[in-house]
Length: 287
DNA sequence: TCGCAAACTGAACAGCAGAA
DNA sequence: TTCTGCTGTTCAGTTTGCGA
Image 1 (cartoon, rainbow, N blue to C red):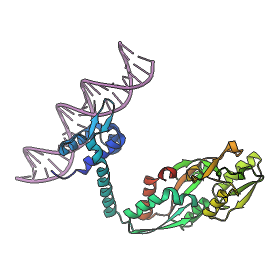
Image 2 (image 1 turned 135 degrees about the vertical axis):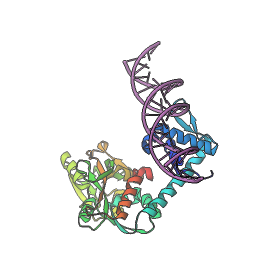
Image 3 (image 1 turned 90 degrees about the vertical axis):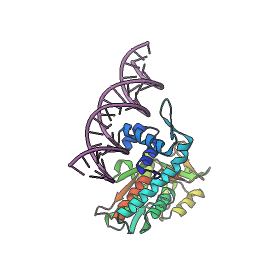
Image 4 (image 1 turned 120 degrees about the vertical axis):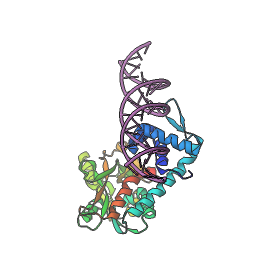
């Protein structure tokens, strides 16, 4: 027998990932005993011990460590072939994304999706979250990733992020009266939360820039002309996160949510949604 | 249809860590 | 020190798939 049994490889990866046969069993919908036997079978066939049975838990041996990366590739390739051969994914998917999320977490997910689904063309639509939800309702996009106040989030939540004040490194814009604000667009999802927080504090403010261009907004902040509010995970490293120490009010958390078209979504849209769910990590972690 | 091998489940067991 | 809960291993019995 010189063929690798993918069931055994999958069990091996699950045990390595979780460091536990019990947890791996739950994940694989098998009993712990079955997983234990699968690992032993794999070890017997390869003639190598893959795990060190320690007093508490399991640890990969050098052989196990060597196998792990290749095992992941093997399973990945298997799943890719399986998905490609068993579904009819082709055509165009229109994905709506807010300006600030495009360049952070999304890029690696889209790259992976393009590799897995070469027959699907992605059409990216950038706008503010309210505009994207409107476009989704009109059928102008197939699915949308949006930012919504946690208290009013309607879609499938992929993550929760802090909304924070952002200013130039060692800048002084936050000291000005009224507070100069740059918020990308007047339909920006953060705008009501920001103005409500400022009004609640009795702090006067004025809009410096709202023409829908994220780069120009960033430039106004970087040059200390204004401050803005972004999700903490999307703040560039050369800008400062400001807060109560700078006299600015607390802002509410936001949910990053996924919305699919209410009418029957295409196979391609569902597949892209699956990739977004599986691949979503906090943008700063991905960077 | 039958027999065999492989793989599974569930129970029993042993070892360990942490709480009481 | 004892109890409890969690973990992995072993084993008996059952199920399933395959070839004759």
